[in-house]
Image (cartoon, rainbow, N blue to C red; front, top):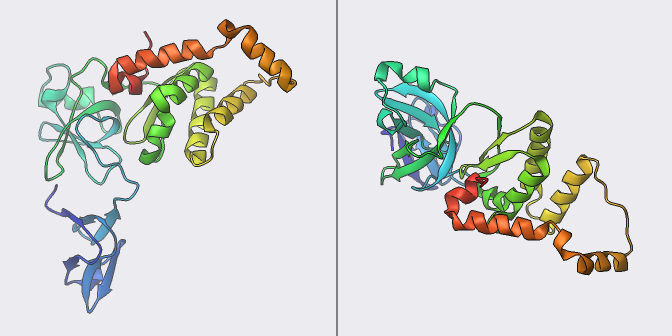
Length: 268
């Protein structure tokens, strides 16, 4: 971790200068202490960014980052965490000179990257050296709470597979809670609204059914009301016409490809 940042718990002493106290701190007898568990920033003002609900990077995570600075053969990357990501020039998929770095990735550009290493000091190293990783040039990116990512993916990739199918979009969910959606404008709008609805309603049961219904209604595919008995006949009569088996088969393919393929939702 940078020298002007450190991990603290409530009650940790931070400074003798009470005038510098800012968010996440309290002052007692003219001394500044941390009021939360988080990362203390001791540069200029003294503030503590709470870790609760924040993305904490781990090696092997596939994330979406945004270039915030270019320095010393490294791109400094915002990864929605109290810690910055470092993408070294050698981790770009082609050989480039330091002077040309901004031609390939400039400030504000987004990337799909892999967290290759996180050391004891929380130095977070990233890489693009994988054919499935890349700069993001099209589509749109939305943000959700990182802790909601597993629900957004669904068991065995079921929720993300359904979202892709219903919206006609390719959707990638980064472990840091950034979601990349690419497709036609109408589909991207629908996908974004559905994803934000999932984030808001993760605690309510029957989420998958509700989201499926929401998507179909938004597309004008309101199903006709049927008697319960007729529904049962339909289900037992023509199981081969139900879309579920094909979806399960897709999910199994995703599983067999490992977590990266599951997250990427790569189509065969």
